[in-house]
Image (tube, rainbow, N blue to C red; front, side, top):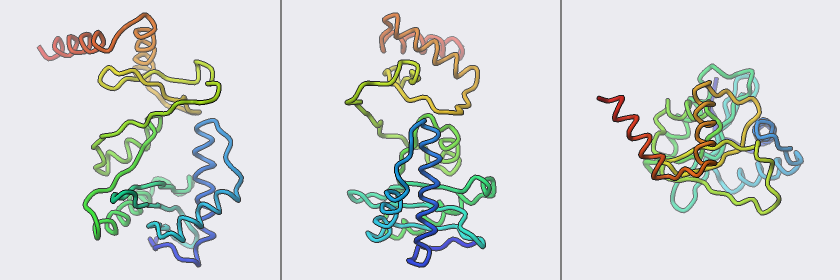
Length: 207
């Protein structure tokens, strides 16, 4: 397998991989993907503006990583390996190649991970990405989905809502926690009360 920097010769391959990435992502989210022509145009735009894009090649394209530069920082925008080639450390190889390139200009590399994507979070933590300093917020300006389309989660007791995904693989303990959390806040529980309950439980376990 070879990791190469994207050139015009391989632009059509990158376009197809980019389409596959969003087809899989939108499927997980339960949303319809955009027209393929839009994704091809986006992929071309990112290539022409000079984003760091690397392809994994082995007779055929296996996957890609794209890194952009925003406000003086480098961000991993997408990492994708075709499903039939997963489990061969191709994703790791792409990340390591991107990290090597970014080190020429900066000592940090950032990314966003959707909280529902447990496999992705485990992957990135395994590679050492474990500093979290932002929370992405969104206001739906159109009629919101039904209540059952969301999970309830918390961050230091602060209530947040995240979309459910198709094919989620939560453990029974995780499911029970989200159910209890939903009921706690529905019955008027507050952040302060939640933290008191959790702190008390942890203190009891530690004794």
